[in-house]
Structures are given as C-alpha cells and as structure tokens.
Length: 260
Image 1: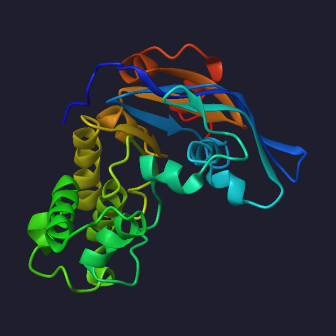
Image 2 (image 1 turned 180 degrees about the vertical axis):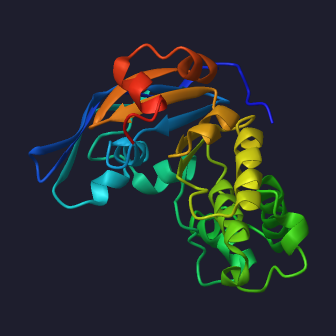
C-alpha cells in the first residue's frame, strides 16, 4: 500500500487557529497547517495534546461546544469559513467527518446513505437514489458485502463494516475533504487494514486528514505527518522525512518513546 506523493494545492488551510475553553483556557495555541488536494495528512501526538481539537475546527464542530472560542482563519477554497454567518449545513456537505466509534443511524443501510442527500434535496428519483447508494458503498469498499441486505439495519453489521458504512455515509454528500478522528482505534487488525487501504484510495479524489495514535499507521497511509504536543503544533513534514529525520527535540523524544 503506497500513499500518494503529490503535495497538491492547498484546498484547506489554517492561519493562527487558537481554541479556548471557558473563554480563557487555551487548549490549542496558534496553529497554521494546510492540506493539499489529493493527500492524506496524519495528526499524531499524546492524548490531550490538541490534535482532535484542531481537527474539529476544520468543519467548525467546536462551535457547538458551550463557552468554546475558535480564533484565526480556516480557509476552504480560499474562503475563510470561521465566521459567525458561515452556513454549517452547507460546509459539512463539503467537509465530512468520521468519528472514533462507528456511529450508524438506527436505520437501514440504504437509509444511512440517503439520509443527508435527502435533507439536501439531492435525490430526485428512485434511480438516482439507487445509484448513489451503490456508488457510496463501492467507494467505501462495502458494496459486495451488503448489496443483498440494503434494507437491513446498519447496526447489524460488524464493527469494521459499520465504520465503512459511516465512511460511505460521509461520501454520499460528495465532500472535498474527509476528516477522520482515530477511525480504526475500535477495530480489529483486519478491519483496520481495510480502512487504511480505503484512506489511501480515497485520497485520489479527496483531501483526507486523520488523527491517529498509531505511528505505524501514519507511515502506511500519510503523505504528511504533523506532531502536536501540549496544545502546540511542534513539527510537520513529509511523512518519510518526519520519521527518518525529525528536526525538533520533542519530536525525537516522542518517536523514541521517551513520553507518550
């Protein structure tokens, strides 16, 4: 499995993004990574270091946390979306999210896929619905496993299948960007491998940003790796360079296991 290598263009970029809880506690210090089209970026670091907090900034999920303030620019297609009047409904069609635990709706596999497109008024006919369900499930490498039970509950699938269903559900709105917050941490090794291969495959047409505690996973799937520690972005670099020749002392210490 070989990740893509092109840096692409900065489809999504941030400038001085800072997060404060209760208006005063600075959980994330000013941070400014960017993410190229057609790439996978891995965000690594110890628990509580700010990587998931940063990830949730990218589609404005932190806005839903009481007394949380997100400062700085979050530029998507050269437009700063970190403004009070940004349409979250529209934004999240384009910047999808997959969470740590699989979260299928209590609906059929088919209705899981069609839930958001129906809300957006995208579905005009039964034929369009059928095509979207098949396309989304194929993109998530799940179609062959579920094509004969589309009307059964998504909760009846295995954990790995449920996570791929959630990925298919996110893909059904045709996002440019897919955010993944430790998407394999609750999965068995076989399912983990399938999701990793899927990340690489999806990066051909999407920008993928993944939070992971698994450094080996970062080496397998990511074009670029960024290391967070105590709310700071310490270092980011192309993945091969990051792991073979880290510049910062704290990065070297983390990679050598001196803290975790």
